[in-house]
Length: 237
Image (cartoon, rainbow, N blue to C red; front, side, top):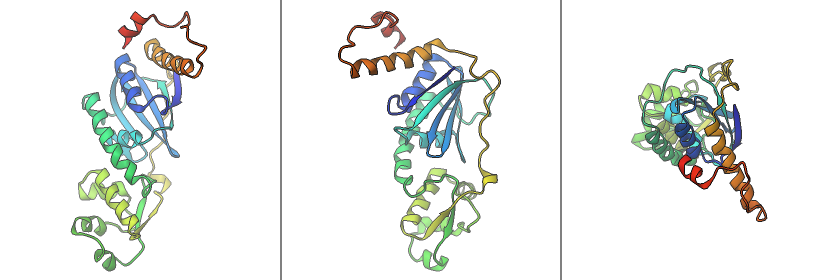
């Protein structure tokens, strides 16, 4: 099974909720610029998320900052190493909160795996920043990527992205791309991808699309024979 669409029609929160309610196993892919974010589900529970150098809730939070990107859902049961252990609703709430921060960071740090490079002497840079940013500045050497700095500082990735974004705004650093050898490998679905189908999840998408068509066509007021009855719709919800 493969379903595709736009986040402008189906917000990411709704897609995750549909996957949970329908107990599907598969991969929800979200286009984020030139990269692809992936959320892996098993029996409806989020197991793992990845987006280039981001994993877990950090990756989902960045995906939540997208509002009109394309998505697709692929049925698949390939085992993954879990990076998500929280309740799905807690994951959603935390990711939505992070998305607000990502929306502010994104214009200044578009490449998630970028390597910050000083564009002015370190001593001068230290005189332009506050004490809270100095530990970050000390690790900017033109070799460490943003995730490397977060690991070495033992702080969350989102905090380092915020700090780097502020340094970019002050024109203290510029960003160099992450070497290709350090980027995450593309996900290859298992051999059974596309074979497993989940009618419930597919009906939810089809019903939403039908409602969009009816709204855009006022003459199409009568429900089609293939649509679920009102009682069935209430039960599915």
